[in-house]
Length: 407
Image (cartoon, rainbow, N blue to C red; front, side, top):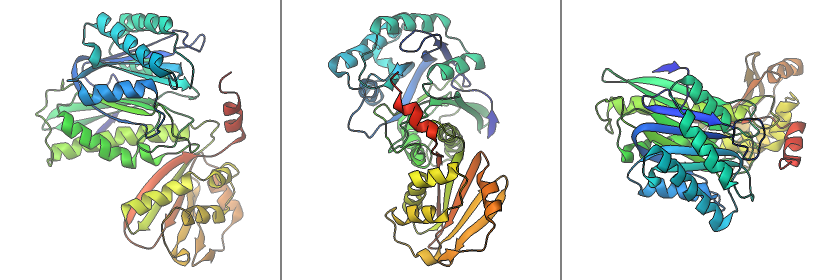
């Protein structure tokens, strides 16, 4: 596997664009397209929130029922959630507009929206934006970057990743982009994420790989404990690498899963580190759990704790908060066997062992916790299973950003 620069246009046959359509924001790109020159098999995962945005309902139907997908239209600023029948009709109109201009079936066009809940889309501006997108779409890294920038809301930076793998001597590429900064607490995946690949793989096997991988990537991040109404992960595979079809149980399938995992984990960590108002990526590694599910529960409990997140912001080695968050995760363990450590580029320090604090330097601990990427390690001493979760610190700016989000 070789890590490369790029995003959704890294794989063969994919084009993209990002344009300013004045959906809600002024003087910035706010609509994007991802387009494949050839039909794609599709896989996707969507929000577990009972309140699902119109684009989620539209895309679930496309992924489950359509023969193939070929384009995605995304807008930022307005979520098209809580918009009733009219909101769903606007999904259809958006898809129909793109399909007519691209010369592809309407049921091969997916749509996605992100932003304020409850506002209706300005469909005239959406349709005009689609025209601009189709006119300006192109291949290449720059076009992928334009698309990644256009889907941002409160994100402070665009998020992209790409990788190449070898399938029996044929180079296969995977690339992706995502957005997400607030309302991040997955129970499937979270945010908007789009992954493209030129691999030849069946829809069934692609779906299996995607659904298994989100469990340890997108499902392991949390910014604020809120699961969005619009969470969508779409994966498109157009087969234009012309590799021998990837089959389950083969080394080629393992290589594909490794590449997919790299993309998903990279994007997930980018979102966690770019949480609204964040100053640090907060990572929690749990080792020595009895089962994988226990390890996931424990790490997610700590990374989702407001008190733990505040301690990271304050560079405070208040290990009691982290132990407490492990204790209410719903996993039975012996606290006197647990060991806790803090780690970053500045070093590693143990703070808890044998049921009590250890003799450590507060100054050294503060130095370790002052880095932009901080890890809390918890060894449960119960078994051999591990899991890692990602989040961010909780700052004053998070409240400020969300107190006036609609303005």
